[in-house]
Image 1: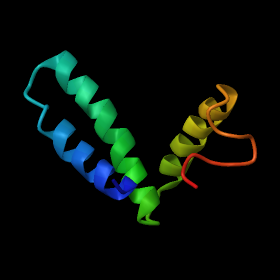
Image 2 (image 1 turned 45 degrees about the vertical axis):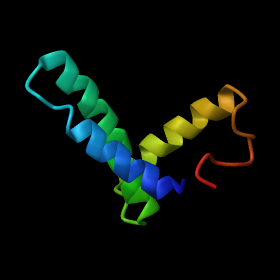
Image 3 (image 1 turned 90 degrees about the vertical axis):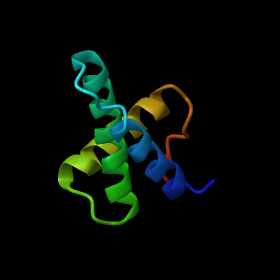
Length: 75
């Protein structure tokens, strides 16, 4: 599955989980914020905040040894 397809499906999934329950809505919002930022990055329409979020995720993945130091999780 292409990353763009996965992101699009995730956005629809988590948007559908917003039902007016505080904990559930907050969880879904967190997921939506990440996937929407990733969608903008992939579309080359990222905001500075989107880029900062992806950089932070990449730093964590590198620190955990899941992504090599000289790579990014998006490439």
